[in-house]
Amino acid sequence: MTGFLARRLLSVVIVLAIMSLIIYGLIGLMPGDPIDLMITADPHLTPQDAERLKALYGLDRPLLERYAQWGRNALLGDFGYSRLYGAPAFAVLETRLVNTLLLMGTSFVLALALALPLGLLGARRPGSLPDWITNVTGLGGISLPPFWLALMLILLFAVHLKWLPPAGLATIGGGLGDRALHLILPVMTLTLGSLGTYVRFMRAAVIEVMAQDYIRTARAKGAGPWRVLVHHALRNALLPVITIVALSFGALFSGALVTETMFAYPGMGKVIYDAVLGNDFNLALAGLMVATLVTLLSNLAADIAYAMADPRITYR
Image (cartoon, rainbow, N blue to C red; front, side):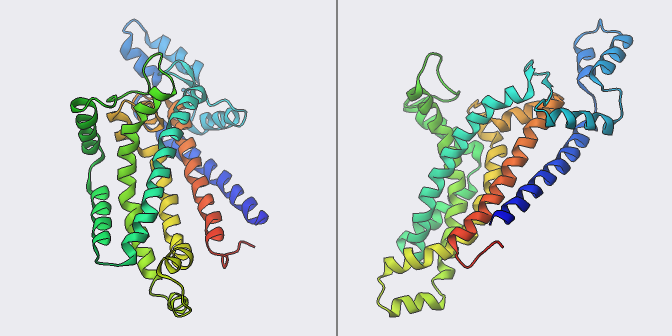
């Protein structure tokens, strides 16, 4: 296992290096740069001022040379300065990263905690009422657009019932309870969106496993229906679910732009989107690199979870 982890961590570093070059190249090929935006905002800047500023920020050098300089600085922990926020790029990402981990982690845990028992309940008797409820829940979670779901939750709980705040991170001067209230609606939106996918895959995996020979053997030995389901079927049905969960976690981390926009939540997806639109190269590149790293680490965690779920899988 130690050798496997070392090889995988090495591959993570290599993929990060390759992705940094690709992302830097794509951002560098975008039309315009921060100096062009400064010229547009201030008509008093002369062409000579623009040339001087481009030389000062290194924008007059070739793309690969600029990338090499950025890479050397990044290895030392310097990811550049954010033009939009007027602060170091990594300092801007730190607060957004904590907000995203709180939002995504809570919704991720809730979605799994609901999907696993619902999938088992539906797969126990396909075609029954619990199975029908499970299918409707899964289909609804997949089909509902996130922006529409967010609007409906805001209208119901914030506008009509006035139970919850409609948006924001916290009220000025509020404590942990106030922040928890602001998290409820965005967490509900993300949880319901992820729940449908997890439930459908869990149900399908358990139904497939229940048709295996060792399940019939366990029943023939006198094991009860719930013991067969939980102790024999669940562990083997987790393998495809682990794959889907690992693939979706990266998307949850960096792709909840719609939810963060609807609830004015300052997370990673929103800050990356704003950085790309605002030609904030350093912030966009640092944010995308963090999202890539999280995706790679989630895939590594899935590989480790495979071995924990199925003892037949070894990494030698």
